[in-house]
Length: 113
Length: 109
Image (cartoon, rainbow over all chains, first blue to last red; front, side, top):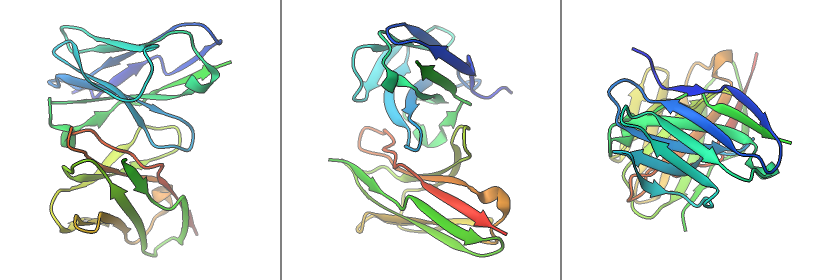
């Protein structure tokens, strides 16, 4: 049984570019949450997807958008990249409203130059 | 507002016991999580407390006092592999985790 997988592992972009990160949830899970974790900080909640809709959103600008597909996998898109977007992006999957059983993927390390 | 407070860094000796404290303020409360995170890796689940009291799981125990907005993680018989960051994360009324910055635990031989 595969756990949560994310791609790519590492990514380097320049300011102003756009990036797409991908996440496949743990088998059977229907909800995907995305987090941004800057170096030395705790994760910050970006948004959560369930039934292909954004259900909740943290305090992030519209440059951050996402999508969930019928197979429950998800994408995180960030437009007009800023240096401050450099971080570890974590995807976590769970059953809807059962966050106490949330599993994290290995993360994507994004560096913006 | 919502706020999590835990020490930035702690040092302990291999074989010893260490207690990592966490105080929190959230909009509503649906339990509190502790996660372990090694550098460059994803957080891994350690414990979940929703009622007051102590939950013991092997070398790790977690305590919760809802009235005081306080929790601690107790690690016994410390091993070098326990060197990591430990994240306290209460869940608010929207079932979202509110994360602290974490406590970096350094284990010395």
